[in-house]
Length: 512
View (cartoon, rainbow, N blue to C red):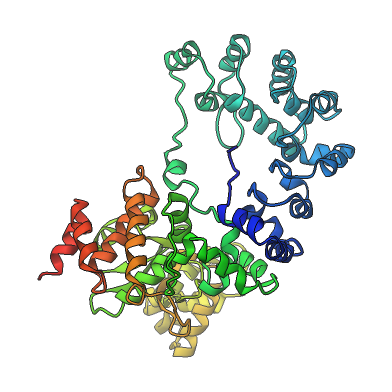
């Protein structure tokens, strides 16, 4: 399967067994903006007539209609603007590549040269021209730099081309240098790799992206479940989902009876085999379904609660518990997001969150950390001079005595309102709790035992996955499973055999 594409076995089964139902389902998506979502564009089981509704972004899909693609190639303006999409078309012919190689747009010519059907003999000349004569336009220059880095990462390079790129290894786009990009190229010979080592050219640390993985991948067959389960998407995607017409209940039932991974959290038992997979687990976790299932139940305990903590560019949602929450409390706020179970707070429907700017923080912001009034007013902005005076008086009460005023509650509120306008997200005190109005339907307690065992199977896959966020998440939820009173004895025995210190500590606490 080409990188960036995926197969959806549940949609494929629907198309084969219930073609009319499948057409109804896909038609509802095709006639809305949701058709441009990645789960639609990247699915190799989506028919061409749906992809045509997407437009040029869907050219990477092998099912994109050939006639429509040829129509795109006739539009020189479109080709110059969207060449990155067009060059990914899996069925490009030699003639089409030859024509693109003659384009007046240097970026289009470059992409045609590096295509497997392109004339690689011209590639060195192209690279030298692009690096030694960068475009004057800022946007074009960035596009060209991005192309050069792409070539370094993906193209089979002759020794002559490698030697040239090696000599200009400090050239970079917005993300990495040529030298760093060369390290990523899987086609480098042993001699070329040795040259990088001997010159002390270091690869870029890509561990962060590997750690997070493709954790936001969704299946198009998951769409019917999104409304019934609720979702953890951004407002942007929620609006797109809300624009979809009502999807027939028969579609969700078909996917559930086919063993769809999202059905594993539903209280109903269809008595079907659900196949555990890393991809299915990643989607279940990314939709926060296990967070809701376990945390909602466990919040009934006196020692378990929702915990929200913010810092610079960080707003984390987690739990407070003597064992499961200890590492989070001990980790720096700006480093804790990578821990198992921790998610970003983003106005989740199942959570009620509050942000409050304290009087103390407001005073600090408006007084510019204690600067004298003359300094505060240097920029000529006198709109909040009164609030700034109140702020200064919070740190130095003699100011009130000097100018003969007292501050009422209304005055402090006035100061805080002014400070809110300049406050950063991490200036606020934040809190969160389960939303009592949400009407949660997910519950570990209410789940059939067969599905509890299947969720253990999913999480066991994640537990044995490589070092990643998914593995850490799996350990957290296995810990929740060990803590929950509704976990069957047979699963508790399996948990004990995992030999994980956190899970073992939770299991030991059950006997106290």
